[in-house]
Length: 180
Image 1 (spheres, rainbow, N blue to C red):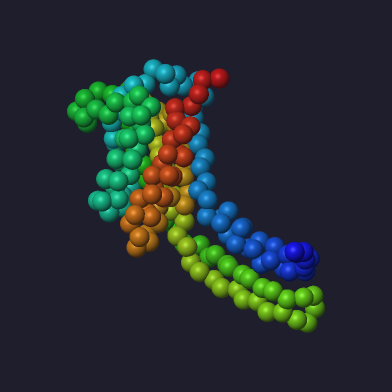
Image 2: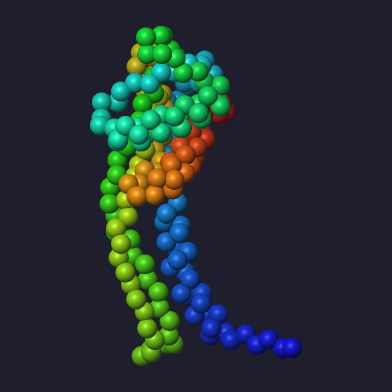
């Protein structure tokens, strides 16, 4: 049996699938972080939650965020202490949800004058989680990380929780910074 490959069909398929690939790339979580130079992170072992002074999401989402962060920090050897206990670090987070337009397009056809296509616009929520770390002794900020596309007000709670956990894991992957 002989299989013939239509070069135009494979070229058309590649053109049609390219927008889907780039849309998928656009949905990936982006993480950035920065640390205060010269900070000895090895000397920090305990932390407690502080209030960043900004409004938090719903009580359930607030608890999920704190639980996920507590789990990651515990796995890295940090111990959470009660607010009335002295700790090495104070931690807090902030969230922001902003809307952005996303365009999805597809098309097929040959050259000039023929073919068909369609483009649709949808609004997506780009939720950013900002995580701050301060020293307890002098309230000096020593680390900040940002994870975008982490918080989403969609109706699918399981998907939201999985996305949140993934974003927090990715965000705290580089905390504490490695000594060079």
